Image (tube, rainbow, N blue to C red; front, side, top):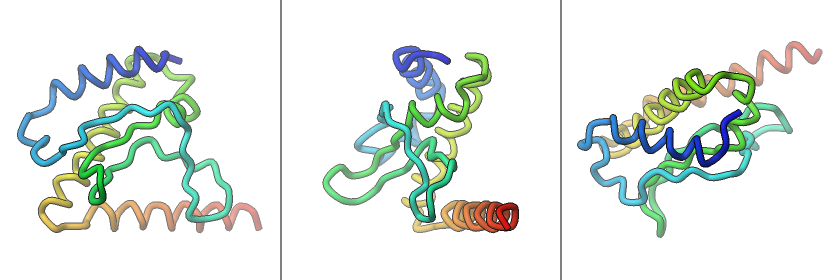
Length: 127
């Protein structure tokens, strides 16, 4: 697995490749955090949160990427494969940002549906 420093460099490179227009009103930028974050809306799981879009409150609008979650989920992958997963996650969070500015929630709805289906499948397997 790559170090947090390597991931930070990779994240900065990816961020520089994205169109500058999508950063409009993302006043808190992109933050790489060391922690592992799990979905806590249901009983303990191994459904990890790789990234999150935040808006409102004192911090404004920003994106968090969780290094610990990437390490846990993708620690076995090559550097190039991790880069692809990181790019996908960052684009996903930027989609939340753009939808939020437009007053849309399509991706939020899609994410909630995914989580619901994940837990339904998991509960069926446990029975």
